[in-house]
Length: 182
Image (cartoon, rainbow, N blue to C red; front, top):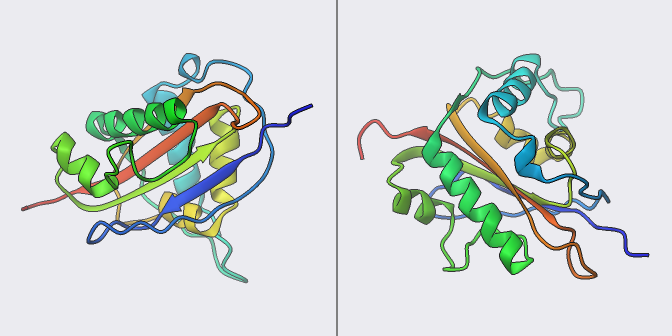
């Protein structure tokens, strides 16, 4: 029987349009429609509790990094939703959309002027808690989640088809800080 596989990639801080993916490979299956359980309040509660509690982010012997709570941003959420839907439609996880645009280009197209922006994507996690736990277990993803340079977020997931070639649930988290002048 096919077991859905999970691959997660983290886009590090976007500067000059560069993203650096890092894979992680646990196995998880999607069970309920992701849109049924995601709301800005639920996402903010989970991620802000994590930021306030702190995370070590794989620094040997390091003290936990703590960060200020984030605010929900509808533009970042729209960019996250479009990317999650695009990945589900293509049955492929990527930091580039079907038009081959990276995060910076997608944010510019949405009219979000940023000083810093990062993106975490994942496929195969059944719940928000599961995907956040996986991101915290990955050094690059954890660094994105705990970055003091970001102030806002948008998160979305999209259910694709579970098949021999795919795992079904695609997640995109976009974190950013608006530019003061751009």
